[in-house]
Image 1 (cartoon, one colour):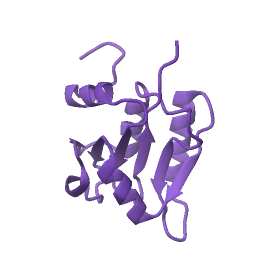
Image 2 (cartoon, rainbow, N blue to C red):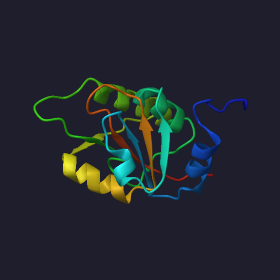
Image 3 (cartoon, helix red, strand yellow):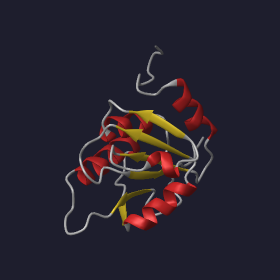
Image 4 (cartoon, rainbow, N blue to C red):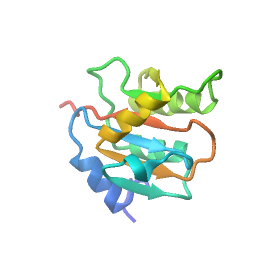
Length: 140
């Protein structure tokens, strides 16, 4: 255990977050997402929710402030899942500013996931609990 480091952030995940550069994308997926089929680098957190994972990741990962929407979610047909508000709230808490959540088509989401630096597959069972994060920079 390390002081001030969320225990959900494994050594493997910490290395991935550290190795990512500005503009690289990280995807957090729910249990239904075909993560193994599309991930370049895959970390499994099968007992953890997507929101707990997002909170842990955002405790270290800065979101890109060079783009309007550094987060994106898979658009749910005909509804807005409650987890989207959770994603927005956690992003705002971590960044200290409103973070818009871009909603993108399912197949566009899959394509962006294939190009992402890494994917974290969680045990989240809420539907459409998938989010893409674009890494930002640390300012002096």
